Figure (cartoon, rainbow, N blue to C red):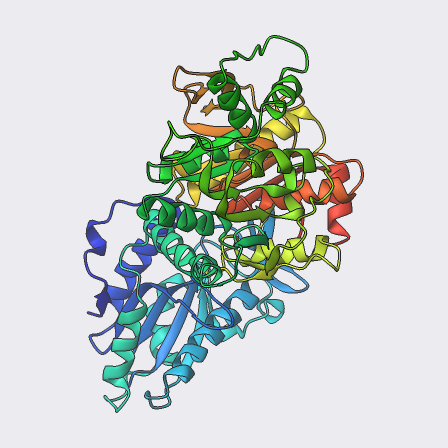
Length: 557
């Protein structure tokens, strides 16, 4: 009987494709002699110019000599095309021969990089237990390396013919150590997300480290950083360092959900608020009560706050004015006007450290860039958060002068596209996308539905339920502590405007129905797509999909 690594597989409670793989393990364990070891669900991580955190070999069979036979299992139906065998997934298709070739090349590359392992044979075969290949000569693989439904019972004999038992050699022990180093003993996607999150945090934290090593006076730093470059980590590092010195920081942004998020992760000792919250607090401190029932209430709020006297320290306030700060951080600077800039900077102590963070591609309101003369400018173009397929799509959409670098350690499946013709089709597309995310192992709390439209125009953001899935959405109200009130529901749904500055492992970007792929549409696509840290499903109107097809290589079905 063959040895199976890891053990405990017989006790697993699994369904779907995973259940089919467990059945194959039982077949291999019983059908192969003890000359063989079978490694199941081998994952690899390449750390170098190209990263791959999300890659899997279904089975790796090793003989006594350390030679390897990789098995790619494809359960269910396959399509036979002129380009070879194809597996259909929701919103996309994948070439089986190309997938096997990548799998084999990735493992060979890892072995070559080791340098201490003697040369071993590496080979691969396809196992499709549910489908009989009708035209093996055009499948894209050598017929003897395909075990289909008609030869399912011969799997073990085919393995032994391709991978004879042999005798132990110099590479045997090292190959087993190599595979045990790669194996992912817990294939739960939540564990993978934990690894991804920690790696992204470590990589993107580089901006927070070296940006704070810059030494100039006065400290006036403008960071123009793309999504996922580490701007929030830099802001948090500055905020935390100020508190640790016994001083007071101010963090100001435009987006209320972003301010709420930053407030939850920042230490006590400073002030975190939106621009309009800052205006409100200044007015209340001056003895005025804002009236939000009037037309143009927010413009009136700013006008009254801006008319307040300049801040000055007084003898009865030895620690300084409560609205003068030692560090001032502006986030989402692309959403600020120059009059807003002037008002915010009035709250900085003369010796304060000033930090301005912005991403021009997330300027959804079309505001001119704020002038900051005599400030040092730092550009951060590397996106560590978004999986590489997302960055590749955006690189095809962005104008040449706005470059973005793929630096994520996550190489997941390609983006899933679902097109629709009408509202009913859009709702069905979202339901299909939710099912796709769940089947990939994501849980309800890992998932967010982001509408291409604002709350007023969206058909999704006010729903309490879609299909069997209950939705949690912003009601428009706030509680006594100033926190946004959300409806009860399993999956968050929000607009691209409100979700800007946030992220989730799996994003369903829906209601994408631009008439023209102009600058505004590209910016909204950029913001929505870069909210994903692992999986992205885009639900696109067929007219918009036609325009996207001309620019990106990923198939849109």
